[in-house]
Length: 114
Length: 348
Image: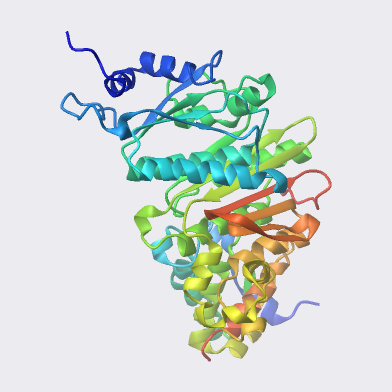
């Protein structure tokens, strides 16, 4: 049975909405860094989801690979801004290709300041 | 007419490639074809240069017979590349790499040699030339590796017949080629092109790590990646090498400076860094996830035969080998393989 939340869920497909070939941690590391992903995609979509009272679904499949520094920077910053527990509870992940990415994101949120 | 002294003769001999060949030929490297010069300074023999400079005399450096980085041979290869660096730093202008007697040469050692030659070329006025192996098999491996693309731009070495590549880079910022090379590798192993996010991440983490840790100045960032395909065995061999400070030196100089005594030795420190134990062992907040990510790919079976040499430590994870070497390589070297024994990951 579909819930209302499922129908209006906000979604990020990293491969389609950001880049198939993502980069490293900072802007200074080059294109499609974790920092850039946070600023241009993750933060606006997260705020949109929170504003609409729905969860943010993030599809991690379909990329050429997500470096630990990319995931760490993007989600640590999200945790810094909104609190790690709050951020975690508002996110839904799809990662069938490399399930280990979800643990890395959880670790990154755990490293955040809040 | 004034008779030439020995030093005058040596100087004159070093002035032309032809004479250089003859000089080399007298030094037990006869019957060998030379690969052409690798130089950043074609004008090093200017007419007003002092003839008696010892630095202008060609010096020959003989490569080990087994020019590979297997545990039993790696010390001799490291000694060889360290000596090459030493000669260049001492101001030698012409260095002859004698590879004629090499019988077993492998891509990892070739990548390490190229990395050192590249480093030397950036910081010294030096002309490196040399001989190719007499052994047909070794010669073939060297040709197929892409070595001549770097040392001899006029070489007719035919790489079109192979998917093998040898790439170098100066930063992690534009590894655009990487995704396609990963797909090519999957074609060799699984018979079809496809994405392998784990493999691409392994290489990317190595590049990232070399930039993060190995160099103090961004302009010094440099790495070499070698990918060698064996279609018959559905096997791909990878070598990645940077010539920075090395992981151990960097850890000791920075983050782990005050907690070195918590490790039984350098090999323990490096092993712990790969196995994600730095934080639990030292209590330090540890953001370096690159090395654990590489190790995870091995422990989960996506890659195999993972070997790391950094400074004076060798780790061979397949054999649970942790060794301190009698001499150090200033940099980091990785070797690993993928074949059909590995866990399949190939997404269309």
